[in-house]
Length: 416
View 1 (cartoon, rainbow, N blue to C red):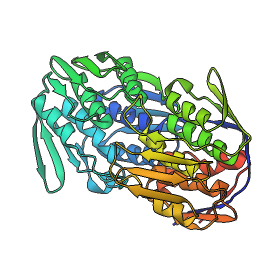
View 2 (view 1 turned 135 degrees about the vertical axis):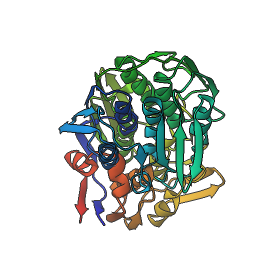
View 3 (view 1 turned 90 degrees about the vertical axis):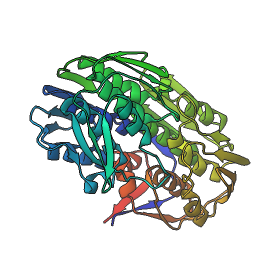
């Protein structure tokens, strides 16, 4: 089991290139199943969830070629319409093969998902949507088994805003017979990026970026080239780290327009931020001020940045309240932050953090992907050495994070 050893107390200075977004790359990789032609993707991040998704697609018969961040996928000869448990248990996004397989091949067998233990993210929205489009769906022996000669267009309303639900049904609708309308659809930039890739493949989608998507099904999709958008959560994580530790960092290949809520909160904390095209510069010279955070679906404050801001608030001046409205079990990092000396009280979905002048290094354990990022940030500002265990969570969603932080002046190394 690999760990990270962090010697706290160093300011962060320098430039860091932002990788492609994991949460955009995963559904876009699945979109390759919708066509027998080649899909060429650029800016694909090198991280374990992407490797797992590629392995799953290869098991189904997708031919994949890689050259750095460039990936080509050909799903001309698919011979297995199944996503087995051993692949899905580590990565919930594997559910995203369901819609494309049923749409193009008329059948799919997908294990009920696993992934981070941050709460119950039900797949019933995916199932209800496919049933509304005419699919027969049964759950047997832990697998979702869906069949349809050809999916039919339908009007589908999401009771809860669901990113993967929106993505799955948008892909399914691209090849359905007739018009599908998705209401109360997710508006996240990663959903928009998938829509742009599908449109490049010949899909007819209107309302991209709004909460109502209208998809007119076509008989077939063709090959295309698409570059994956920058990772807004990686961008936010580095900006929070520099706000907590102090310093002067510049992000390149980033997008400030999809980070407005995060940048506003960092400005509130005392950071000076300058945006120029695809670069974001952040300077921080004083102790941060505590900032209140409430998560909600895009364009509100992202749940994937909640843990990082909690780490920032641990050493901030004053007290702050963090309210988590998306996942009911997303405060597992609290116990670990307390081991470093953080003062946090939790009641239900609300955490109250009283900032302290100094955290103390200790051995701590990552519990999920974004929690592990918050522990790294806490380690960067803690006095002495912090050892973060179970960092396979971190590797699922961050590309070479310790190398990037080292280049900014952090004392951080991987222990094998």
